[in-house]
Image (cartoon, rainbow over all chains, first blue to last red; front, side, top):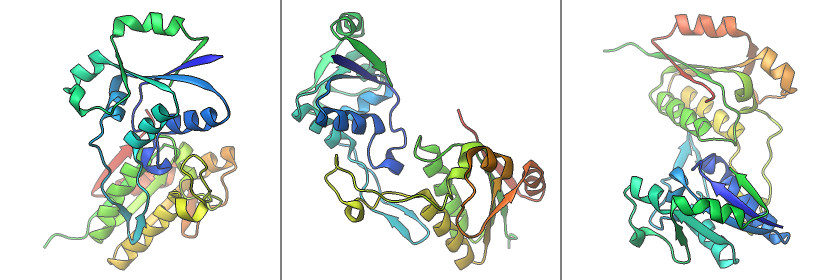
Length: 126
Length: 137
């Protein structure tokens, strides 16, 4: 079974979970043999931007260690053989240039998504 | 010189599911550093924020054990802002909505957390310089 995961909501609990929960569970399922593809759309296209970081987080004297490294976690999915697609129109709407993106991505047009969906057994929209 | 401010926050989201918990606690942290008196009324899923049973865990995807992972625990963040308020001459009163606690079985909260009702929120709001409601969307 091949599943297409459309990730649209971005930075959901990333500080509290030290990663994106969807990217995390895809990693975990990949480790269990799952066959996944990913489409980053909407605000989640920013996950493909390499130059992003998280400033230090502190509450009172409790300093929180290990900030999420979203771009690295997405790049790691690609390194594991997961195809990660990014919607061109969503990049353009946010002023993100292709040069800002990590290597190994597949850029797709919005109009191509139905065909992409049809090439998978299931579509999970996160 | 301006008198000490009293601020009330109404939080509604459960932790670990979006960014609003962290954002709310950042705002509360600033108020605590300024020595303000702070009220928090935790409504619906927000009663899970100071849940005493929250525990750190290892993370195989990250390749870390529980110690290395240092997983964020909102209960620690809540305790930290309570301490910060006290350190700066203020106080942070955290009230969990009792019915919300009951329906979730979220009874075991960290020290300093009180059980209350919407009537407490009403009183807090009336006695505050300002109120910020951060609801579930």
